[in-house]
Each structure stands twice: as structure tokens, then as C-alpha cells.
Amino acid sequence: MSEAGSPAPRKRADARRNEKTLLDAAAAAFIASGVDVPVRDIAARAGVGVGTIYRHFPTRADLIVAVYRHQVEACAEAGPALLADSDSPHAALTQWIDLFVDFLVTKHGLAGAMQSDDAAFTTLHAYFLDRLVPVCDRLLDAAAAAGEIHAGMDAYQLMRGVGNLCIGAENNPRYDARRLVGLLIAGLRAR
Amino acid sequence: MSEAGSPAPRKRADARRNEKTLLDAAAAAFIASGVDVPVRDIAARAGVGVGTIYRHFPTRADLIVAVYRHQVEACAEAGPALLADSDSPHAALTQWIDLFVDFLVTKHGLAGAMQSDDAAFTTLHAYFLDRLVPVCDRLLDAAAAAGEIHAGMDAYQLMRGVGNLCIGAENNPRYDARRLVGLLIAGLRAR
DNA sequence: CACGATACGGAGCAGCGTTCCGCTTTACCA
DNA sequence: TGGTAAAGCGGAACGCTGCTCCGTATCGTG
Image (cartoon, rainbow over the protein chains, first blue to last red):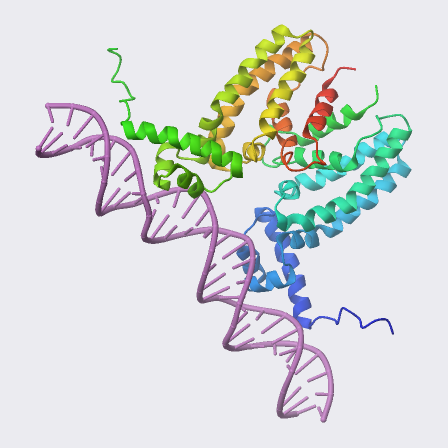
């Protein structure tokens, strides 16, 4: 405990309470109206002022990251597990991408937000990519080592491509993101 | 000429002049700031009031369509031409998709606008898809008939997928839309 | 030239993100 | 327990956006 003055002096009780309330309200609002839901709506759901949101989560990206952190972690941890359990690295890759696609298409507008180059979304890029790209990279390496796919595919690009393909997948029955992502992965295959 | 009262009673000279001016201003503004440039900016460039824009082009989509109509037509007409000139239907398909990708990635934000499900963009969907999907469909059919790709790929879905992959391709050197589109097309190949 | 029809301009409204500051609540200490 | 400084809160207010609306200007024609 003698370590340099603890930089996190424990927040006030009402602040912690509000943070929890806000996360719940935001999660509900995201489900109801997508991740682009107006800040005022989230504030109203939580019964707080908009200032409170901005104090806890300076940018929308911070809020999104906080809401979905658990699910992203789960996805990241599933990578190595799938690799260990599957028959082939390619099968593991396919399953893992499926997991990622499922995650994206069930969160209205998240895929779109993830590709936005708006400065406010830097946090979102940073977190999602830093957490998931290395996982994807290991899967790609394993598949390449097994000779199942061509080497040299950049995990970052693949993830962005998959993310892009998921844009607008909800509420459009004529567009099947999973199928297109499947084609993309099929295109990786060594012939 | 005796046909039912001509429904286009020839517009006033100033109106025609303004329409032309607006198209030029919009084209310049799109290049400078992307297709999401504020309406006021376009009006300022053209030296007109915002009301004038809305009178000529009720929605942003109408303006975008008008600006890019020529290039879309050229792309549509290139389809049959490529099919006639190429060694194989698959080569023609690849070249045509390349043309489409080139078009999209050079127009800031157009790929994004094309996927937007905002009601105001219905016109954009309608025009782009109505014009290009049939062309793509013919190319797909020809390639399938030649046994080069699996049958049953929906042209609409493919176009949407390609469009999606082009989102954010400008101003991001680490993301190569062309390569990913190439993988997607490769994924179509019959094995 | 005069007079309707047509088109124009831009003020004004509503919805959004974001900031800022007076007031309230909390935690701590005498 | 009561008092006080710091931490946190609420929401008015600002700037930027799309879009509408109507008084005014311009055009084409008899």
C-alpha cells in the first residue's frame, strides 16, 4: 500500500450509483434505439442530467465500450478456446468470426460506429481493435501454418472488412451479412 | 406533339441556370468535404439560398444522384462491354467490380450514404440499385453459366457487400478495400 | 408596359451534441 | 454531532445542423 499516492481516491457513493444506473440505462437505450440514441434520451432513462453522462463518459465511445466490455472480453477469450477445441484452425477461425458477426449484428448501429473515422470514436477503435485483432491474428497464423489459407492476411484489415459487411445487417431481410462474411473467409482459402 | 398536356412546361431561365450552378457547386463541395457536406455550404458556394437547393433537389439523395448520374451510367454501360470483350465472364465480373469500387472509394462518404437506411436516401438506393444490380446480375449469370462461380448469388447482396467494404476506404492507408473485395469475389469461385 | 406566375432568399424552428456554473450532496474531522 | 471543503449534479444555454415558409424579386407574355 505504500505505493505512490493511489491515483484512484475512491469515488463518492452517489457517483458510483449513478455510473451503474447510467450503464443500465444506456444498455436499454442502445437496444431500443441503437447506439446513436440521443444523449438526452439516455439521461432521461437514467433520471439524471446530461452533464452527469459527460462527466462519467466524456465521449459516446467511452459509454459504448463500457456497456459492451463484457461481451468483447468474452469474444476475445473464445478465440484461444476455439483453437484448442476445433478440428482445424480454419474451423476455429470460421466459428470465431461467426461469434464476432453475431455480436455486431445484434447491436443496432454498432458496426457503423466502429468504422466511423470521427475523432470522438478513437476510444472505440482502440479498444475493439486492440482487444480483438491479436486474437484474430493468432487464428490466422494457425490457419496459415496449417496450410489452410494463404499467409499474409492482415488481421486488422480482415476485422474491418467483417465489421463493414455487418453494417445495415439488422432490419434488412434481403441482406445476409453472415453469408457475405462466409464468402470473404472462403476467399482466404488456399487452393 | 398533341400528346396529353406536356407535364414539363419548360422551366424559367433563371431556374435552369441555378440548377446548373448548383450541380457544379455540389460536385465541388462533395469533393472538398464529402457527400455529407452541410447544405448551407453548398448554397454558399453556389451563391444561392438554401431554399433554392430544396426546391431543385428535395432530398440530399436527389442531389447526389444528379451529380453522379453520368458516372453511374458509364459504369452500367461498361458491364455488357466488358462481358463482350473479356476472355471469361469471371474476368469481366472482376473488372466491372473494380470499376464500381473505384467509383465508390473516390467519392468521400458515398459508400456510407448508399448503405444508410435513412428514409431520405430511398432515392439513392433506388437509382443505384435499379441501375447497377441488373448489370451485375447478368455478369453473375454469365459466370455461373460458364461454371466459374457457384450459382445462386444474389446480385443485390453482392453489390451491398461490395459497397459496405468500400466504407472508410479513403483516408485510411491500412485498409485496402480493393483487396477485401477481391477476396469476396474469390470466395464466389466454384472449387 | 403591366401583370400573373414562377422562383428566390434567408429568417426561423426543431433536434442534436456539448459546455459551464450555481446548487446539492457527500465524506470527513474536530 | 455539527461544520466545512470537495465532489458531484442538473439543466440552461450555445453552436451547428436539416428543413420549412412566406414576403419579395424576377421572368415571360399579352
